[in-house]
Image (cartoon, rainbow, N blue to C red; front, side):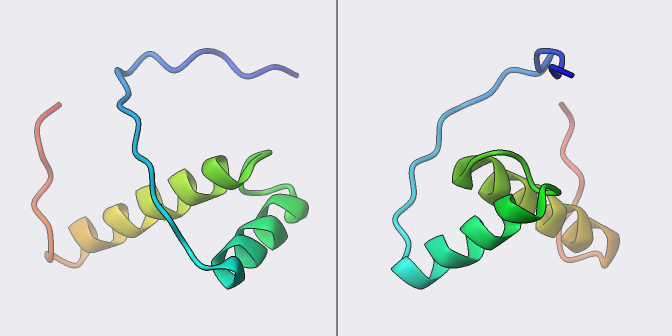
Length: 64
């Protein structure tokens, strides 16, 4: 089933990582739970980490 388009505005972010991080991202993609590509997996990890930091008070929730 195709996912619906993201309604939120997005901005591109390019990062460089080690080959080991690429392997971890590949493992997450292979699990089927973190998207279909390395960038999908990285975005989900970043988003989840931000959510956790907001929950523990390290970051304040920003207005959209």
